[in-house]
Amino acid sequence: MTTKKTGMARGLTSYGDAGFSMFLRKAFIKAMGYSDDALERPIVGVVNTYSGYNACHRTVPDLIEAVKRGVMLAGALPVDFPTVSLHESFAYPTSMFLRNLMAMDTEEIIRAQPMDAVVMIGGCDKTVPAQLMAAASAGVPAIQLVTGPMLTGSHRGERVGACTDCRRFWARYRADEIDATEIAEVNDRLAPSAGTCSVMGTASTMALAVEALGMMLPGGAAIPAVLSERLRHAEATGAAAVRLARDGITPDRIMTERAFENALRVLLATGGSTNGIIHLTAMAGRLGIRIDLEGFDRMGRETPVLVDLKPSGRHYMEDLHDAGGLAAILRELRPLLHLDCPTVAGSTLGEAIDAAPGPWPQDVVRTLENPIHPEGGMAFLRGTLAPGGAIVKQSAASARLMRHTGRAVVFAGAADLAARIDDPDLDVTADDILVLQNIGPKGAPGMPEAGYLPIPRKLARQGVTDMVRISDGRMSGTASGTIVLHVTPESASGGPLALVRTGDRIRLDVPARRIDLLVDEAELAARTPVPVPHAPPARGYRKLYLDSVLQADEGCDFDFLRPAPTRTIPPRS
Ligand code: FES
Ligand code: MG
Image (cartoon, rainbow, N blue to C red; front, side, top):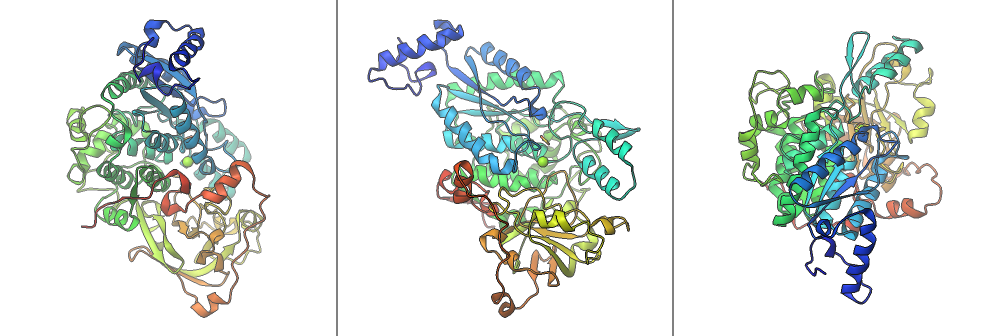
């Protein structure tokens, strides 16, 4: 009987007698049909996030088969196992509420079972950050595989994709531009294949950032879900996991401060989802790395948006793949990157860029000299309305609203918004600023993507398409508009946002990175915060969440899951 602390001998449950414990373990696992030859080999765990609720992960069974082939060709034993799976549309109250549950589940189950490395198959928005938070904490060699983006569909000759076009068509339906028959037709066309949203939403953003981070094999972020190329990438991922196991390359060796800076560059250059900064903050936090948001903003001022994808631009993920994928972006960003960072491929990021095919003529990824937007996709704001900060996705905002002072029209929570936003008697004009309270990490709870407040119906019918909108919530990466998000501290934690009243004046000044409530301090001191809408008494996971969740600037992780930060990025220059 083997005594090496790899393969089946890892993390042996003690029955007092180590030999007997191993004897018992092997007796049970042999009922899966494994031979002694198989069981003497290194083990690569494969995280199975297939779920009948999760079409973004519909191809996971095929990917598992391909990963297993790669693992076996490299001489190790693959063993797949299930974890929590999250789909954006089937994760009540929000997938952000459940991200930390998935991270805890994944971490503990990786640790509980014997494996020398793990292939994590994720894709839908919160799954990839959850898996990398888990891997960082579990400390087992790990590699990310994503399911990949879905293909685009066609509606009456017009190309459509989830879910920027979902919002666009719904807005047209709300404005009575299209009828009930047509909106039903659109519904059949928006998600035409398995895979993740086809625009620069959170899934695409995280896939690209994680490839830049070095935790995915080069080229893996953009391959569409249903292409055979993705299966070959999965096979290669399995083989790479065996190398990581043999060399003992744990995630902290890859996910370094400099690697996170590379990921932040890509987040900015893609005009990526605002959720991306929360997730990267949470992932880095697991390794004691703090992301300084003012520093992130400084990086943004020198990192233009290069990728012409919806919602900021025109194209879809399959076009980015055809244009060369992440390598086409990295090639342009080269002077801003740390090229010596190691990746799970065994080579450095710089070597991966050199080895990638291309470049060839394309119009999806622009050059540094001819960007889509001269500054990065996101700007970090501070001011009397957000002492802990706020984010605005400037690449998806209206230029005319980047400096705007207006009268606040306040909604006390998601239910209040739903009840009044379409009221024909709502006192609101296009110059007003819509404010939504109580949708922060603790407020809703779960920080819903309700920060994309709809334009009041009566204004939409007049042709108004954008207004300044402010909340402590999030916005889907697939949405656009002049939208200030992640206001910290949140309303439900007593932030100044809880004191705003309809009629107050608010000044947004993105060039100056300010968001200010123009009400004097004496008046504010006399006000009581708007109450948090009544929530049922907390028990179980909800109680754990409410007791432990951190604010957006700390990645909305649980306070007890991360070590005290020991390093800050980016360094002050
Ligand atoms: Fe899964 Fe958009 S719903 S990636
Ligand atoms: Mg999303």
